[in-house]
Length: 297
Image 1 (spheres, rainbow, N blue to C red):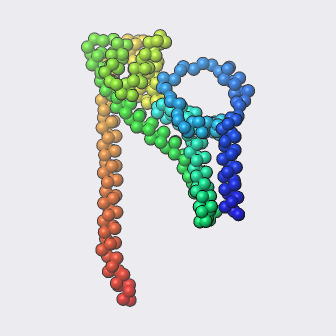
Image 2 (cartoon, helix red, strand yellow):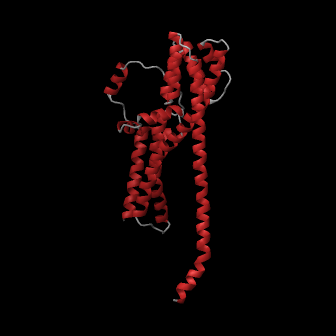
Image 3 (tube, helix red, strand yellow):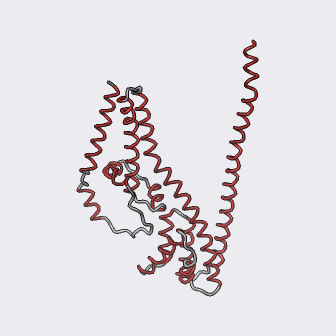
């Protein structure tokens, strides 16, 4: 009876989720009025995709997750770097949580119909655990992907600074050096820099303003420092060649230190399987002797 009650509760939850998906709740009037009266902000330089099946399944739960304060500012920055929209992220969290909550109950129902019922506590515990894991998993994946992209962007920014230094040494102006240096690379990082400079040219704003905005969206402090140095060069005529060269050298040294640290940590992790194998070999060798000794006592 308890198993049937749990299965009925899971079926009711699924029907409720289906109704919410078919008839999503409307936005409150205060939210719409606040959206109309809000001051315009600069359009984000980073684009976002629309998502896949998870968006269609979990989008009705987005308003509830937003009411809980999700996502936070840090997660929003990570989503901007990975080119994921907030709605797609929240829908994916909701879809994975609902899927993880219903799947163990469905498996338990199939086993009950097949004549092999499980204790009611086991499907319930598995459902809660899988639902929590599915709800947290998108955060972990987004954070890891954002860190990888930040590291790649810092590496590309160091090369970009070297190119700007060479162009400035050859007699190019600040604006020309910024634009010419982005015409060489074709990676994601160079595309973001090129897009920021194109936005500055089309909107008739200074390039260091858009570079500063891009640095804030990416949460890369080195790009904001570059924008500040270029702002001094463009507005007050300061000489920035030496500062750019020093900044590029510092970024190269930092990248080398981080790569060395990652290599050392990887080496330490490689020693763990060998230790486990040695421990298992010792147990395999001495276990027969120990059983003989204990049996003879």
